[in-house]
Length: 263
Image (cartoon, rainbow, N blue to C red):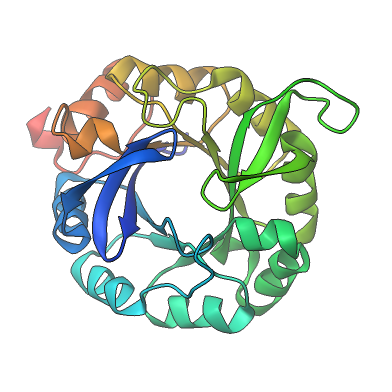
Protein backbone atom coordinates (compact mmCIF):
# COMPACT_ATOMS: atom_id res chain seq x y z
CA UNK A 1 0.00 0.00 0.00
CA UNK A 2 1.25 3.48 -0.86
CA UNK A 3 2.16 5.71 2.04
CA UNK A 4 -0.22 8.54 2.82
CA UNK A 5 1.40 11.92 3.07
CA UNK A 6 1.60 14.48 5.83
CA UNK A 7 2.07 17.90 4.26
CA UNK A 8 2.88 21.12 6.09
CA UNK A 9 1.34 24.35 4.84
CA UNK A 10 3.37 27.55 5.05
CA UNK A 11 1.18 30.62 4.50
CA UNK A 12 3.37 33.61 3.76
CA UNK A 13 2.55 37.30 3.76
CA UNK A 14 5.20 39.93 3.02
CA UNK A 15 7.90 37.30 3.37
CA UNK A 16 6.77 36.14 6.83
CA UNK A 17 5.06 32.95 7.99
CA UNK A 18 1.50 33.70 9.10
CA UNK A 19 -1.66 31.87 10.21
CA UNK A 20 -5.27 32.89 10.67
CA UNK A 21 -8.70 31.42 11.29
CA UNK A 22 -11.06 31.13 8.33
CA UNK A 23 -8.62 33.34 6.38
CA UNK A 24 -8.86 36.19 8.90
CA UNK A 25 -6.99 37.63 11.93
CA UNK A 26 -3.59 36.42 10.77
CA UNK A 27 -0.65 36.59 13.16
CA UNK A 28 3.08 36.58 12.42
CA UNK A 29 4.83 33.27 13.14
CA UNK A 30 8.33 34.09 11.98
CA UNK A 31 10.67 33.12 9.17
CA UNK A 32 9.20 30.65 6.64
CA UNK A 33 12.64 29.43 5.60
CA UNK A 34 13.54 28.40 9.15
CA UNK A 35 10.12 26.79 9.55
CA UNK A 36 10.53 24.85 6.30
CA UNK A 37 13.88 23.51 7.48
CA UNK A 38 12.44 22.44 10.84
CA UNK A 39 9.54 20.57 9.24
CA UNK A 40 11.86 18.92 6.73
CA UNK A 41 14.04 17.68 9.58
CA UNK A 42 10.98 16.45 11.50
CA UNK A 43 9.92 14.26 8.58
CA UNK A 44 7.37 16.21 6.53
CA UNK A 45 6.57 14.40 3.29
CA UNK A 46 5.97 17.64 1.42
CA UNK A 47 5.63 21.35 2.04
CA UNK A 48 3.11 23.68 0.46
CA UNK A 49 4.06 27.33 0.28
CA UNK A 50 1.29 29.90 -0.32
CA UNK A 51 1.76 33.62 -0.79
CA UNK A 52 -1.70 34.28 0.63
CA UNK A 53 -2.22 37.87 -0.56
CA UNK A 54 -0.55 37.73 -3.99
CA UNK A 55 -3.79 37.07 -5.89
CA UNK A 56 -5.87 39.64 -4.02
CA UNK A 57 -3.11 42.24 -4.42
CA UNK A 58 -2.62 41.22 -8.07
CA UNK A 59 1.14 40.88 -7.80
CA UNK A 60 3.69 38.21 -8.48
CA UNK A 61 5.12 35.74 -5.99
CA UNK A 62 8.29 36.48 -3.98
CA UNK A 63 10.67 34.24 -5.89
CA UNK A 64 13.62 35.00 -3.63
CA UNK A 65 11.76 33.39 -0.72
CA UNK A 66 10.97 30.37 -2.89
CA UNK A 67 14.63 30.03 -3.81
CA UNK A 68 15.74 30.21 -0.18
CA UNK A 69 13.22 27.57 0.88
CA UNK A 70 14.14 25.30 -2.03
CA UNK A 71 17.81 25.51 -1.06
CA UNK A 72 16.94 24.52 2.51
CA UNK A 73 14.75 21.44 2.07
CA UNK A 74 15.07 18.25 0.05
CA UNK A 75 11.49 17.00 -0.19
CA UNK A 76 8.75 17.84 -2.74
CA UNK A 77 7.66 21.43 -2.48
CA UNK A 78 4.74 23.21 -4.14
CA UNK A 79 4.17 26.93 -4.50
CA UNK A 80 1.00 28.94 -5.02
CA UNK A 81 -0.26 32.48 -4.88
CA UNK A 82 -0.48 34.99 -7.71
CA UNK A 83 0.43 32.56 -10.50
CA UNK A 84 -1.52 33.52 -13.63
CA UNK A 85 0.76 32.71 -16.58
CA UNK A 86 2.85 29.80 -17.83
CA UNK A 87 5.90 32.05 -17.58
CA UNK A 88 5.26 32.58 -13.86
CA UNK A 89 4.81 28.85 -13.34
CA UNK A 90 8.10 28.22 -15.12
CA UNK A 91 9.85 30.77 -12.93
CA UNK A 92 8.60 29.06 -9.77
CA UNK A 93 9.72 25.64 -10.98
CA UNK A 94 13.12 27.01 -11.98
CA UNK A 95 13.39 28.54 -8.50
CA UNK A 96 13.33 25.01 -7.11
CA UNK A 97 9.71 23.96 -6.57
CA UNK A 98 8.48 20.59 -7.85
CA UNK A 99 4.88 21.74 -8.30
CA UNK A 100 2.81 24.85 -8.81
CA UNK A 101 -0.57 25.39 -7.18
CA UNK A 102 -3.21 27.25 -9.17
CA UNK A 103 -6.28 28.65 -7.46
CA UNK A 104 -7.89 32.02 -8.22
CA UNK A 105 -6.21 32.42 -11.61
CA UNK A 106 -7.44 29.00 -12.72
CA UNK A 107 -11.03 29.95 -11.95
CA UNK A 108 -10.65 33.13 -13.98
CA UNK A 109 -8.84 31.32 -16.80
CA UNK A 110 -9.36 27.54 -16.71
CA UNK A 111 -7.11 27.11 -19.74
CA UNK A 112 -4.20 27.91 -17.44
CA UNK A 113 -4.51 24.38 -16.02
CA UNK A 114 -4.19 22.71 -19.42
CA UNK A 115 -1.44 25.10 -20.49
CA UNK A 116 0.56 24.27 -17.36
CA UNK A 117 -0.04 20.53 -17.75
CA UNK A 118 1.08 20.66 -21.38
CA UNK A 119 4.21 22.64 -20.55
CA UNK A 120 5.32 20.86 -17.39
CA UNK A 121 3.23 17.68 -17.04
CA UNK A 122 0.11 17.08 -14.96
CA UNK A 123 2.24 15.91 -12.04
CA UNK A 124 3.51 19.49 -11.64
CA UNK A 125 0.08 21.16 -11.59
CA UNK A 126 -1.98 21.21 -8.39
CA UNK A 127 -5.43 22.76 -8.26
CA UNK A 128 -5.91 24.66 -5.01
CA UNK A 129 -9.61 24.74 -4.11
CA UNK A 130 -11.00 26.96 -1.37
CA UNK A 131 -14.60 25.93 -0.68
CA UNK A 132 -17.27 26.87 1.83
CA UNK A 133 -20.81 25.80 2.57
CA UNK A 134 -23.51 27.52 0.55
CA UNK A 135 -27.28 27.10 0.09
CA UNK A 136 -28.02 24.28 -2.32
CA UNK A 137 -29.16 25.60 -5.67
CA UNK A 138 -29.17 24.63 -9.33
CA UNK A 139 -25.71 26.15 -9.73
CA UNK A 140 -24.31 24.84 -6.43
CA UNK A 141 -25.87 21.39 -6.25
CA UNK A 142 -23.33 20.01 -3.78
CA UNK A 143 -23.90 22.79 -1.23
CA UNK A 144 -20.23 23.83 -1.43
CA UNK A 145 -19.13 26.92 -3.34
CA UNK A 146 -15.67 27.83 -4.63
CA UNK A 147 -14.31 31.16 -3.38
CA UNK A 148 -11.19 32.92 -4.60
CA UNK A 149 -8.81 35.75 -3.73
CA UNK A 150 -7.99 34.35 -0.31
CA UNK A 151 -11.62 33.66 0.58
CA UNK A 152 -12.72 37.18 -0.31
CA UNK A 153 -14.71 36.56 -3.50
CA UNK A 154 -17.53 34.02 -4.08
CA UNK A 155 -17.67 32.56 -7.58
CA UNK A 156 -21.00 30.73 -7.87
CA UNK A 157 -19.04 27.61 -8.88
CA UNK A 158 -19.98 24.24 -7.45
CA UNK A 159 -16.98 22.59 -5.79
CA UNK A 160 -17.57 19.12 -7.24
CA UNK A 161 -18.18 20.43 -10.75
CA UNK A 162 -15.00 22.50 -10.59
CA UNK A 163 -12.95 19.54 -9.31
CA UNK A 164 -14.13 17.38 -12.23
CA UNK A 165 -13.42 20.14 -14.74
CA UNK A 166 -9.94 20.71 -13.36
CA UNK A 167 -9.14 17.02 -13.69
CA UNK A 168 -10.41 17.05 -17.27
CA UNK A 169 -8.17 20.02 -18.04
CA UNK A 170 -5.09 18.22 -16.74
CA UNK A 171 -4.62 18.97 -13.05
CA UNK A 172 -2.62 16.17 -11.44
CA UNK A 173 -3.75 16.75 -7.87
CA UNK A 174 -6.26 18.75 -5.83
CA UNK A 175 -5.54 20.50 -2.55
CA UNK A 176 -8.96 20.99 -1.03
CA UNK A 177 -9.27 23.57 1.71
CA UNK A 178 -12.47 24.03 3.71
CA UNK A 179 -12.80 27.68 4.67
CA UNK A 180 -15.42 26.74 7.26
CA UNK A 181 -12.88 24.53 9.03
CA UNK A 182 -9.68 26.48 8.30
CA UNK A 183 -7.71 27.27 11.44
CA UNK A 184 -10.51 26.16 13.77
CA UNK A 185 -8.69 22.99 14.89
CA UNK A 186 -12.10 21.27 15.12
CA UNK A 187 -11.45 18.67 12.43
CA UNK A 188 -11.44 18.43 8.66
CA UNK A 189 -14.62 18.84 6.63
CA UNK A 190 -15.12 15.12 6.06
CA UNK A 191 -18.25 15.33 3.92
CA UNK A 192 -16.71 17.79 1.47
CA UNK A 193 -13.43 15.88 1.30
CA UNK A 194 -15.14 12.56 0.67
CA UNK A 195 -17.39 14.05 -2.01
CA UNK A 196 -14.48 15.56 -3.93
CA UNK A 197 -12.33 12.43 -3.57
CA UNK A 198 -15.19 10.35 -4.97
CA UNK A 199 -15.80 12.80 -7.82
CA UNK A 200 -12.26 12.62 -9.23
CA UNK A 201 -9.60 9.99 -9.85
CA UNK A 202 -6.58 12.20 -9.08
CA UNK A 203 -5.12 12.50 -5.56
CA UNK A 204 -6.92 14.79 -3.10
CA UNK A 205 -5.13 16.56 -0.24
CA UNK A 206 -7.40 17.41 2.69
CA UNK A 207 -6.84 20.83 4.22
CA UNK A 208 -8.36 22.94 6.98
CA UNK A 209 -9.23 22.09 10.56
CA UNK A 210 -6.61 19.75 12.02
CA UNK A 211 -6.50 20.17 15.80
CA UNK A 212 -5.54 16.77 17.16
CA UNK A 213 -4.11 13.52 15.78
CA UNK A 214 -7.49 11.81 15.51
CA UNK A 215 -8.58 14.42 12.97
CA UNK A 216 -5.80 13.32 10.64
CA UNK A 217 -6.62 9.64 11.10
CA UNK A 218 -10.29 10.32 10.37
CA UNK A 219 -9.69 12.21 7.14
CA UNK A 220 -7.12 9.72 5.86
CA UNK A 221 -9.18 6.62 6.62
CA UNK A 222 -12.75 7.82 6.04
CA UNK A 223 -12.72 10.08 2.96
CA UNK A 224 -10.44 8.77 0.25
CA UNK A 225 -7.95 11.62 0.70
CA UNK A 226 -4.37 10.56 0.01
CA UNK A 227 -2.74 13.28 2.11
CA UNK A 228 -3.51 15.63 4.96
CA UNK A 229 -2.33 19.22 5.18
CA UNK A 230 -1.43 20.59 8.61
CA UNK A 231 -0.59 24.10 9.81
CA UNK A 232 -1.73 25.40 13.23
CA UNK A 233 -1.34 22.04 14.94
CA UNK A 234 2.42 22.07 14.22
CA UNK A 235 3.07 25.81 13.97
CA UNK A 236 2.05 26.27 17.62
CA UNK A 237 4.11 23.22 18.67
CA UNK A 238 1.06 21.35 19.96
CA UNK A 239 2.32 18.21 18.22
CA UNK A 240 5.44 17.35 16.30
CA UNK A 241 5.25 15.65 12.92
CA UNK A 242 6.85 12.59 14.51
CA UNK A 243 4.08 12.38 17.11
CA UNK A 244 1.42 12.73 14.45
CA UNK A 245 2.96 10.03 12.29
CA UNK A 246 3.34 7.70 15.25
CA UNK A 247 -0.37 8.09 15.97
CA UNK A 248 -1.31 7.50 12.33
CA UNK A 249 0.88 4.41 12.13
CA UNK A 250 -0.69 2.99 15.28
CA UNK A 251 -4.12 3.60 13.75
CA UNK A 252 -3.26 1.52 10.70
CA UNK A 253 -2.51 4.43 8.39
CA UNK A 254 0.58 3.80 6.23
CA UNK A 255 2.98 6.73 6.57
CA UNK A 256 6.66 7.28 5.88
CA UNK A 257 8.73 7.18 9.06
CA UNK A 258 11.91 9.27 9.10
CA UNK A 259 13.68 7.11 11.70
CA UNK A 260 12.07 3.72 12.41
CA UNK A 261 14.27 3.42 15.51
CA UNK A 262 12.23 6.15 17.19
CA UNK A 263 9.17 3.91 17.26
